[in-house]
Image (cartoon, rainbow over all chains, first blue to last red; front, top):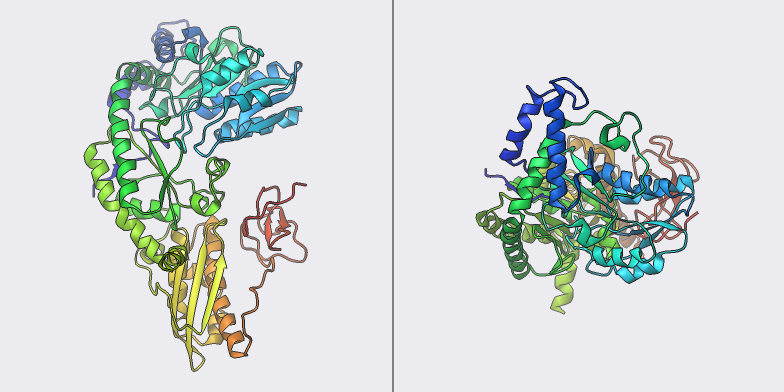
Length: 393
Length: 186
């Protein structure tokens, strides 16, 4: 059976060109970049080369890029590092309600240090209103964090506008760009943000390799103390091969991103349009146009997401769901609930996220195979029976 | 795959799906907030479950549980069916992931509710009594709860009683995992 991967938001397949660049750093170039001898030099050069490449991807300076172990670490570093660095000026954060758990939980964890967080809600399409962010700011606010794009519903947030409103109040802004960077054009200067998180595994790079961009002159305390790696802001021997992979993936994305995005958004639109046509009572979640090019998210009424995910898996398709049953904690996606979806509809959540290798045949196969799955599960559903009865009346 | 082959078989080919128009008892449990809704229909003849059918809105485990419960219950006496426990259901399926064990409760509960409905109809009551609320089991590990809702002794999850449906739900959550009511923060 052919397996078809529609789970970009979980992980992207490693580009073979990225793997090729990484391999020597598991072998002959095993040295520690901090070593002064000849074994250290190639490793150090490779790390600095990767720093320049990833800086170019987002129009930053190499010295503003800090290598970390994951998008979650980048987000924790930004929230905790920037908030604690300014704790004497105030202890209030403003964060959107649809952030990744690594932002929301980091903000929660800061409560231990006396910080309070205002969560700013979103509209029915997952959009944050910059005016509402500005209105939530108080004289005590030391950091605002609004994501660039949401991985569960694909909505691209008006971060530049948020940053513009905060700049006049001299409040630093962080944006979690993990779902966006390497997939849509990201320019830290144009956005006007002070910090930005990105992760290699969202643009055909390796897992365990991410970056926090910190604008020069921004105050931030390290999460990990120790040696002088990453200018003393993130101690620990560098994961050289993963950093090299991130650099190579960034270099490729910078060149190929536009074509990839154009191709994938065409497939995405075909997927959304045809599924809506072929399946009754299907709702697109997230914004219809301001959305990630690889991202199609929807809710199918009267059926539950994990059951659809499972049935699709049997057919060889890999997808995600934000339903309560699909999560370990048995809680529906906080993003869908923040958008005002009722619990029953949120239970029917599915995310089809395309990757570079996705072909139009893959999309057509899904369009053939998915509607019968929905039909079969709806035949089991007491909610669907009830709907048909009411419709018949 | 997180599920056993038997669970997958019942998920893909569920037995006894449907509605019994002339059912002697109907039982409904669950709500969309916790994810699963099950409706069981029973037809009783000479004190035996002559036919059992169900409909389920829920995850793979919930569908498989309903299917196996219907299969196990068919042909049982009413008395035997009332003794069908969630443990036996989970065992019959070759086990369920820990966070899906509550699905096996729902299956047995829905069957029992249908039988209670049958009994109360037989006793001449116009309508079945409302299904028992009762915080009998921890919703997280299914261990028994003793006395007032507090800490589950089996899995040490802190629990509280939902003011709306009076079932045990996890403390510190915003909404009740059973009925979805907003919980007062404490």
